[in-house]
Image (tube, rainbow, N blue to C red; front, side, top):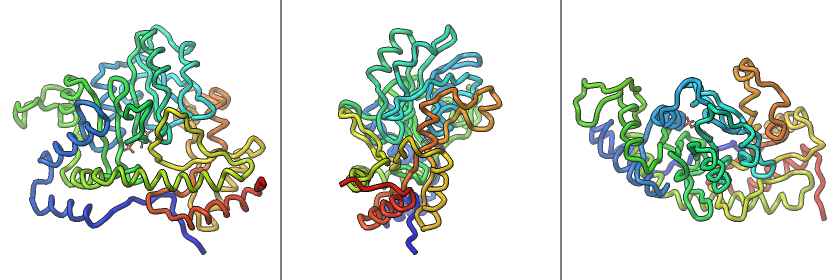
Length: 375
Ligand SMILES: *Cc1c(COP(=O)(O)O)cnc(C)c1O
């Protein structure tokens, strides 16, 4: 039987050598690899500063804190994302106010934002879902009209571009994330990207127990965390980053194979990409047609897995997660996000997936879903 995983990190000998080199140096944390990785990440995002931390979630959390968002403030965001993009607000007592999505790109719909703004609204946090940039021009115009800050969760979008401008460069800050299923990995890790020197300095202090820059190991200026990323992780990141263009090209190739094969299949829809967007393919997600229910989708997932093809639902909307429901959210609140969330399937997707495997996945999906090939 075939066995195709959902994702798989691309680790090569050069990655292993880079990690071993740091181990041999005995300088395992707060060393030269951190600075070098930050310099290179800032370049990728086209911003002045990158601050690396132990996860993408930590990067979002520190950014929210450093912007001075406080309990009682509201931030507008999307329910169709990974849970961290709303949790980072809850960590600081900030209320996530969800706004429904564009049914084609699955990104937050800027046209629905104005009606969700209240006197407590401070910011809009948009997510570049699945590596496709959000509608940044429209977001910027709503934000400036209502004097709100903009925040970019670009954790899924390293290397993507919106009208030529890199993901991670929009708003007060952007973030990258390096968990093993992302486009590139450091094992665990994340980064905050910003043009603001004061925001970067504040996050550097917050990640390192609130220490002041050069003020000594036992001088703490503020309540901080230990969100540091080690030199071991950063060495892996530098080594991976050197291959990023190649890895993104491989992923784009795999996405193109899927798109090509699915073009002649009824009732299964690939992601719609806006002409001005250059996607950095994070996952490959298809949506089933209207006639499929959520339980049809879940049966398809089970049957695909039984055939050795690992698949997943992606995303279950945030407002329907158990502890968000306890806050009063309920089914029906954001119908577009729910409609999409009930019908999406993430197919196996990683750099070295070959064309035969992509064909096998599509074959299995066509059979299991019982869909027709159009002539
Ligand atoms: C992966 C991801 C994060 C968080 O990254 P971690 O490194 O897993 O903490 C945040 N937001 C989105 C949209 C993500 O996909």
